[in-house]
Amino acid sequence: MSDSWVIDPADAAAALEVLRGARTVLMPTHQNVDADGLSSPLAMRLALAEYGVDAYPVITDGDLPSNLRFLPGIESVLIYGQDELPDYDLICLIDCADRKRLGNFAKDDPSRLDGSVPIVNIDHHKTNSRFGVVNIVEPEASSSGEIVAEIFKLWGLEITPDIARNLLAGIYGDTLGLRTPSTTPHTIRTVADLVERGAELEPVVDHIFRLKPRSTICLWEHALHNIRWNGPIIWTEMTREGFQQCGAEMSEAEGIVNFLSGTQGSRVAVILYQDEDKQGWRVSLRGLEKTLDVSAIAAHFGGGGHPLAAGAHVEGGEAEKQAFIQKVAELVAETPELEAVPVG
Image 1: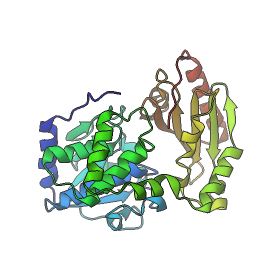
Image 2 (image 1 turned 120 degrees about the vertical axis):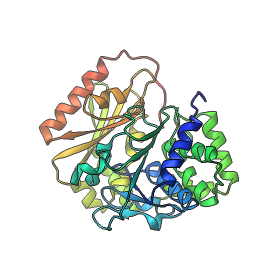
Image 3 (image 1 turned 90 degrees about the vertical axis):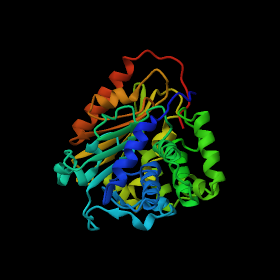
């Protein structure tokens, strides 16, 4: 574990200057938003309110995940396609390495992200292309929540209990409760500081990891029933029918790929989520070895992420899905098998 990443104070100051100069900030989330992808923008919204700036997180596809409704300030979140967007003059993307991952917000009007509206880019993904007027990208950080906590420290911002809970949820969600290799001494110190500032650990752990509706159990049954092997990879698919039969949300499937990644005898775990229009698949990949970079595999298909956790999108139906699985298996087989490490 390394504590080598440091945010340049000049970058933090530049981000504050740009954000404080805005009238209204829009914060679209990446597709199938997770705890870090929503709680970090919520923390930023609460922080910017201290400077008199309005900021609004926007779910760019689907609905607000039910397990994240405990987050402070959640009532401010807008749902794209359901709620009217405010007249914004700045975009702040947090935890989004690729503007193409902004769901229908990007698809419906690509000009929203062509640079005509300035973008502040805060992220921890290795594959982020630094597309903002200000870029704070730290791939060695455990989560965007950890980065935002450090930014607030450089700003000299007072961390309220509500801000602290949001940041704690982001860090805990992305590190699976401080269990991933990205968890460093700095991460643990940040968590301790947030707890001291009023973030309660129990509700974060309960809502993200423990509590689950019956629909989640149904969905996991669906996923486990569909498990297949292809050489060095274990994979499964989540069809739209499966979600409908279980009455489940997309967010309820997020933990399955981490569960599969601990399977002995496999090197990579893959889960495919069928698009709503059934014309493609969103893919999550988890690696099992420090020397096997799944973000490089995802990049082969136009995706990206982290060395041990990445994602991509596959267009097409059954034939394209099978071709994707076969190609991933070939790419994995090309990498010599070395020391395996647990993920999640």
